[in-house]
Image (cartoon, rainbow, N blue to C red; front, side, top):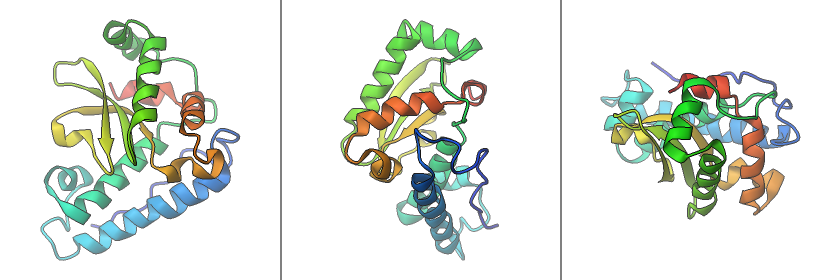
Length: 191
């Protein structure tokens, strides 16, 4: 079973001005595609050849894990956006955010800080723990919370290729725009 680059739920220019078409051409069209291609090549002839992404993430190490996790992480990230996104969480997710972080604003501040302060490359995640509580975590490089028994709800990619063409070294500016693109219907459905 080979993996394919998933089709985005929006056109490459529909997230502008927050995330430019040019950034998506590189981030999605080149980086994400490279992870897919590398994974397909690396898993051929291995015990992971016919496994799902989740199975590979949970059991693989090294290059196979890194590429599988990056395929999964990027797909999850890109599917969290909408041209009409923004605002606040709704429904059950909003209730749990308010209970765990006192308010949506406090959650947003803590999540933004986790994304801004992650050293080097990686991901800030909002995850659901087995007891249903929410937690904000940082994962370096291709780290994925599935390996720790956590359910991903939201992620912010803070590898430089996610924002450098649009924001250069101003990661906080990218994080501010990130919130304007979140599709809370999709994200809320993950809880």
